[in-house]
Length: 177
Image 1 (cartoon, rainbow, N blue to C red):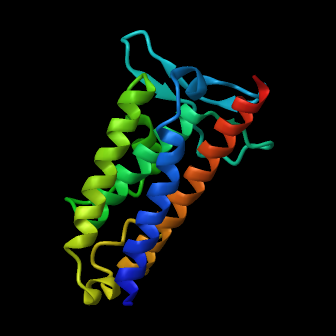
Image 2: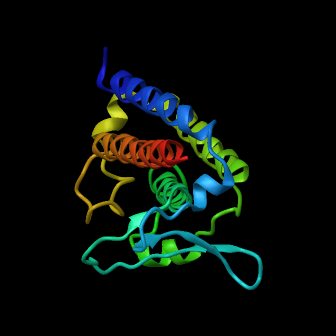
């Protein structure tokens, strides 16, 4: 198995674990705030949804809601795709966060994340093993210098972390009922 095959395998495994939770989510699950100090998604007066966000290291770090994690996934995935496979990512994560909205309901958020998945998977399928060592598409990430293979591995880790966050919150809420 090549390194690229492993990256694809890990991505597929992580997505399958995430979908176990996405398929069960409700709008109420997405907006549930289990503690007072939560980051969540909120409707704006114009009907779009925004997320709580700060580039400062808060202490304590707010607990994210499922809706916030879904928003976060869309934000980093869109930017990572633009950087690795599109017309360029922004290194200004605060600006990316401010420009990213949440669709307002779980089904639409799942549809959006599935679109990100499908587009990312197609991009992975178009890569060769030699592409993993390139750095020409990764300057936006971690101050540059890392290979595409490193960034793809990070994306898999980030996706797994987000899957675990959503799963943990969903299971906690289900067990409190």
